Length: 156
Image (cartoon, rainbow, N blue to C red):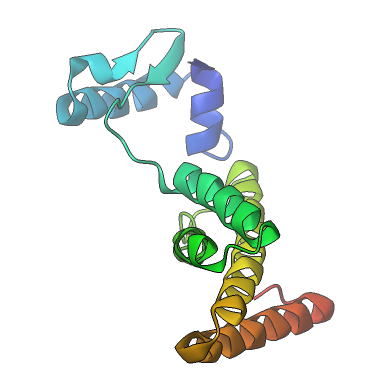
């Protein structure tokens, strides 16, 4: 459950407390219309209920855990797929063109996840060898470029 004022702060940089209901209620009505009346629960505190939803950020967090575990056990083939799952999700970015502190925090988490995924993918492809060595080199180059950007302060 999330209080209405927190939802408003997440949506609008400096919400006018007097206008929150007038601005938020139409959005909640649209959500209910699109996802069903039971999708938005509560009045003063809200909860979005999407039982069949697949959240890529949650899947990526679970995937990186599996990939790092497999790398630690030197099970390269088992690490390969989850490392790519985490990498693809992390590289998609998050809410481009939007700006808010909570968005910046998720972007920071995705940047960290991307590094971890690249490291796991590089280890897995190096461990697999053969035709995967080219992928290991590409991942290593990306990691090197990202490290250079981090030192320079560009972050990309």
